[in-house]
Amino acid sequence: MTKVPGVIIKSKFKLPQATRRARRYTTYLNYIDRPETKARSHQFENYHDYMEDELKSSGLFTATQDRLSATEREQLREVFRRAQENGSILWQDVISFDEAWLQEVGVKENRYIDEQRLMQATRNATALMIEKEQMLHATWTAAIHYNTDNIHIHVATVETMQPRERGKRKPKTIEKMKVQVVHTLADRTREQEKLNAFIRDEVLAHKRNHSTESLSNRILHPELVRQYKKIQKQLPDDKRQWYYNMNGMHELRPSLNQLTDTYLTTFFEKEHSVFKQRLDTEVAFYERSYRSASQASTYRKTKEQDLYMRMGNAILSEMRESDKSFPKLAKNVASSPKQRIRSAFRSERIMQETLYRIGRHMNDEWDHIKNQRAFEQLEQEVQHER
Image (cartoon, helix red, strand yellow):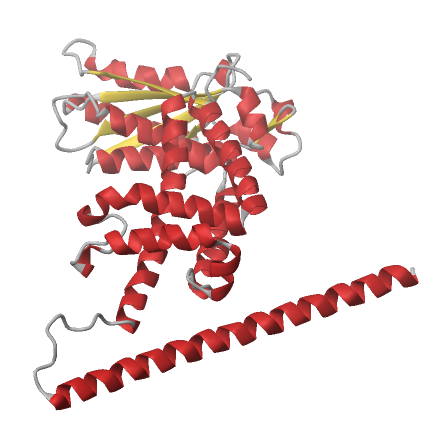
């Protein structure tokens, strides 16, 4: 695997100078717009009218326009000229791509480049930068260059009003610009939806519909029930703390995570293995895109933590419901015969309800076993007839 990041952003800025002020910023526009930086016409022969547009225009684009006419280019230069005269800083960003990475995400195919996606990625990243840095009166333009080994995009930004004195931007802003570029060019929505579907639509759905202390679990999976009861006995008295991320659950979180692991091994061993493989693929993609092991590790940790947190809350929710169904008897013995009789009737009612639920669950389990046996028998008969 190549060690070159999929996306690199390099940034610098220039302060307005007292001498030759009128030429400095417009000279940079001329630099990023020079003819030799543009793609040759044969690179776009499969795009409708794309070759004509490339030949007729300068290659500059903005937040709202893909191509500028000669008049619009001159108007833009005038905006930059006035911004410099007003004391604006000129911010210069270069977004560079590894071409193998562009091929992986489908932006580059042989000699053909999807410029629309590159322009949209630039717009998204620049809009985010302007928002994060609170540049209320910013104007920018950009151009895609093909004159080096790596395709890259030059972005020039100025402030037309109320210019700031400092040009340094927060490193986190530049990092978020890179993330925005990657997310725009590489749509990982489908892959991430598969990870989320395993957590929410399979594991959590199964947990909500199956009691941990069911008769079948007590018989077939006693270790699962044992871990569940052990946690239940250690819960804090304050039920408001019975949520995974609450401070009162700090010491019980490792036990909850262990119970989640046992649950996955018991009911979703194969599915969990596929989940981990998909997660490995996503982590590898992030490491490939940013060439940052820490960023990739953070993504893995976040996704795994999401699984443990949601399952932990589902388990604690079951415990809260169980606690409501089986209220603890008062510590003090009832002082009057009537209170003792009422307490006895209440205990009897709870016992009858419990027996009824267990009996109903046993019937459901038996029906399931009979249906499973019938299906297996039918399957054997079909195989025999073949």
